[in-house]
Image (cartoon, rainbow, N blue to C red; front, side, top):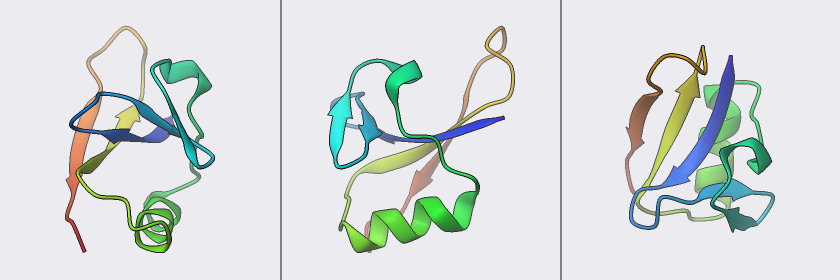
Length: 67
Protein backbone atom coordinates (compact mmCIF):
# COMPACT_ATOMS: atom_id res chain seq x y z
CA UNK A 1 0.00 0.00 0.00
CA UNK A 2 1.37 3.38 -1.05
CA UNK A 3 0.26 6.72 0.42
CA UNK A 4 1.27 10.03 -1.17
CA UNK A 5 0.13 13.67 -1.25
CA UNK A 6 -1.24 15.14 -4.48
CA UNK A 7 -1.92 18.78 -5.35
CA UNK A 8 -5.52 18.88 -6.58
CA UNK A 9 -4.93 21.92 -8.79
CA UNK A 10 -1.78 20.83 -10.62
CA UNK A 11 -2.07 17.04 -10.29
CA UNK A 12 1.54 16.87 -9.08
CA UNK A 13 2.75 14.73 -6.20
CA UNK A 14 4.68 15.89 -3.13
CA UNK A 15 8.37 14.98 -3.11
CA UNK A 16 10.22 16.16 0.02
CA UNK A 17 9.40 19.85 -0.27
CA UNK A 18 9.09 19.85 -4.04
CA UNK A 19 6.54 18.57 -6.56
CA UNK A 20 6.78 15.94 -9.28
CA UNK A 21 4.41 14.78 -11.99
CA UNK A 22 5.60 11.19 -11.55
CA UNK A 23 3.71 9.12 -8.97
CA UNK A 24 6.67 6.74 -8.58
CA UNK A 25 8.97 9.63 -7.57
CA UNK A 26 6.59 10.94 -4.89
CA UNK A 27 7.45 10.77 -1.20
CA UNK A 28 5.67 7.82 0.40
CA UNK A 29 4.16 8.11 3.88
CA UNK A 30 3.75 5.38 6.50
CA UNK A 31 0.28 6.47 7.51
CA UNK A 32 -2.37 9.13 7.61
CA UNK A 33 -0.94 10.88 10.72
CA UNK A 34 2.35 11.46 8.87
CA UNK A 35 0.51 12.93 5.89
CA UNK A 36 -1.56 15.25 8.10
CA UNK A 37 1.52 16.33 10.07
CA UNK A 38 3.33 17.20 6.83
CA UNK A 39 0.35 19.13 5.44
CA UNK A 40 -0.02 21.17 8.62
CA UNK A 41 3.71 21.79 9.10
CA UNK A 42 4.21 22.94 5.50
CA UNK A 43 0.81 24.64 5.24
CA UNK A 44 -0.08 22.64 2.14
CA UNK A 45 -3.39 23.73 0.62
CA UNK A 46 -5.68 22.09 -1.93
CA UNK A 47 -4.14 18.64 -1.51
CA UNK A 48 -5.40 15.11 -1.18
CA UNK A 49 -4.06 11.79 0.02
CA UNK A 50 -3.74 9.23 -2.73
CA UNK A 51 -3.85 5.63 -1.61
CA UNK A 52 -2.69 3.01 -4.09
CA UNK A 53 -3.33 -0.58 -3.06
CA UNK A 54 -2.88 -2.16 -6.48
CA UNK A 55 -1.49 -0.43 -9.61
CA UNK A 56 -4.07 -2.32 -11.66
CA UNK A 57 -6.98 -0.74 -9.74
CA UNK A 58 -8.05 2.91 -9.43
CA UNK A 59 -6.40 4.98 -6.69
CA UNK A 60 -8.42 6.09 -3.69
CA UNK A 61 -8.29 9.88 -3.30
CA UNK A 62 -9.16 11.51 0.00
CA UNK A 63 -9.34 15.32 0.21
CA UNK A 64 -7.40 16.93 3.04
CA UNK A 65 -9.11 20.05 4.41
CA UNK A 66 -7.29 23.37 4.23
CA UNK A 67 -6.32 24.14 7.84
